[in-house]
Image 1: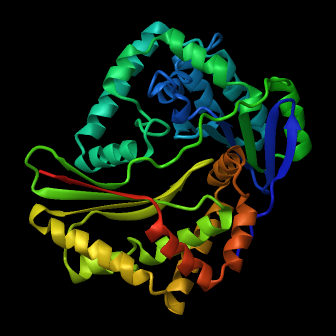
Image 2 (image 1 turned 120 degrees about the horizontal axis):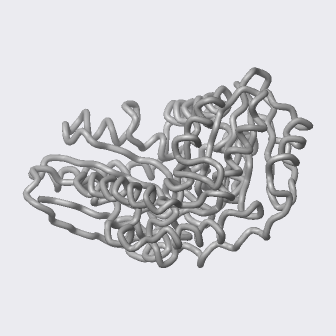
Length: 402
């Protein structure tokens, strides 16, 4: 089995740097900023809009020149915004590491948010929001998530059409000034570049000093539980979302993740076999774990014909309850192997590994290597206890019918 090493950790002024040397011609860069949607404040969606504007021009490069420069250097020059953070990433040849980091630093510290580009990106984001709203499964997920988490994580990462329309370039610039400083960032570098070279590059292109990292907003706590029923249009389908509060401690959370693999939505898992194979219900089925710095949740999503709504609910309840009786050795072995496979994929992917290193550091989670060791040491009793704990935890079940 591929064992992931612990990355080398050091500081460059206020910036936390993780370096993971992997021989080869390429180096992946993940620059993570604690500037996700939970920091939006009075402008829901402003973190996501800021991500768009980081690619629209700096004091030295307009939008066309910026993207041409990225194309000259390599691939995977992109960014993503989540609830906790924004991740900018880049994968380049080792010799281009300095220029790639310089470009990322320029985007973070010298974006000018041009008014004409901002107007265009607002239209793009509003169109994205409309597309999501047209999807009933996404609509239900957003409503359930908002009800479950309240103000802390309740609004969609993209914001709403109304909140995006109210945004201004000045608001974006203020958000950048407040959140984008080295003390609020983690840089992970995975690939052929060596540590001494990384230090020299950072000394040349990255600000050496920065304000201390900012504390997160108030702790996230599940608020809306029970059952929520929604109606929309005249769809022949019924959609179901269930949110179950998961443990925050690393080892119980990992045990819950293994349990979810056994119960879950893969073809060999219990829920798939019950809903799709035995009962022949709907096509859509998902079960997974999402978590941040101070929250974790298991998310179930499913759909069926409107006439089968009660049968779908019964199938979920029955499968979840039976799982509380315990798992077989074969089920546990398959779940462990699936998770080992994902760790092995990370070992082979410089970019995914860099993003995972940075996000875990920023969220205060155990490293990949520590998580891999903990998973290998989990006992079957811990996995079974974790599933029973999920069934007792605060839960919201949301149903959307036409």
